[in-house]
Amino acid sequence: YDFPASGERADTTFGPVSFSLKRGEITFIVGPNGAGKSTVGKLLTGLYRPARGRIALDGRDIATYARDEYRQLFCAVFSDFHLFDGLLRADHSHERFARLVEGFRLPRDVLTDRSRAVIDHLSDGQRRRLALLMAFLEDKPIYFFDE
Image (spheres, one colour):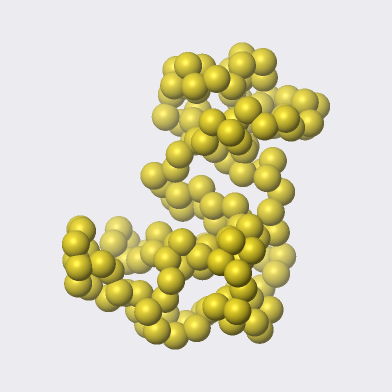
């Protein structure tokens, strides 16, 4: 991946990288700050396009997918996550949502009011847990969690 000419990593290149992931396995990508863990996630989830090389899913080059079709396979929570209002207000199974709110030890008012005002009053850790909870509710085939 070639970083854009403007920005924090201007004119630098990430890679090459080579690895395989297996369906059903949990894989950790580890390394020091700045090693490229988030960049790998953004490449895998289709947020970044590789400048060279190939990413394949079940042997099929991801370049052959419609970009949105490919992205819909993933649920990603990056370290600089954002809780989208539409997702927070989506009509999820109340029973499952209530179990997850309890399991993630979130305030009960999140069950009845997922407004921006309630979300903004959560601690950073609570907002991160809510982002994970919302990821589980999306029920995608592939999850990527950054830090």
